[in-house]
Amino acid sequence: MQILRNLLKRSVVPDAAPVAAERPKYGFFGSYKDFDQAARDASEYDSAAIAEHAAAQIPKFFQDEFCEIDGRYQQVHSALASVAERLGKSRLSVLDVGGGNGNNFIACSKLSPSAPYDWAIVETESMCNACTGKLPIEWTASIPDRLFDVVLISGTLQYLPEPYVALEQLARKAPWVIIHRTPLIDGPDDRLAIQIVDPDIYPGELLRHWFLSGEKLRQSMQQIGRIVASWRNVQDDPAFVQIEGTKTYGFLLELPT
Image (tube, rainbow, N blue to C red):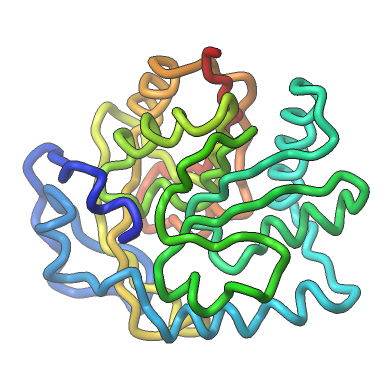
């Protein structure tokens, strides 16, 4: 994701295994040392076409009776409710990093219309341009210079150039962090692969994608705060069958005050 690139150092991981000679139709392939090495086989994350496609979906999700309440949105809603209760607040300020077209805001607002949110989404320039004004929330291409009640990182940590540095920086923006829909693997080392997006979703996109070590991520979280709760995102697991042993997780992290 481009929005944090200027803030973060390039990542370094153990020597890469050979990149697969044949690419799958969609899914994941390869093993790379760092984001720069993977760039030769990837496209840029900031895509005006994808942004316009995402923005076009907003009206049918927000303006009619439809409400997506599958388990993954319910998990975000439950985590936000837990934070609100612990803080004693009826209205939360949320910094949603990589929040796309606002799908988590839409679902949580429909599930709890009497508990409104002050919601800000950090996204690419293209996504901000395409989505701004379509929902009662803020889209911004840079981290706002203010504090929030909670930072939400849903399906995003794995796309950042240096996820551990990003997590440490974002943890300074709020006393609570929700990490959600993050694929983890066994062992002490991370793996950087290329994701070919399913052409039925959007054709032609090849994204750099981390499979983080569960052991390493937990150690990183414990160094900056306390893991209050964790959960499995089992509905996401089938997307990662090409990377053996992958399981998708979420976490609620409390930061020291």
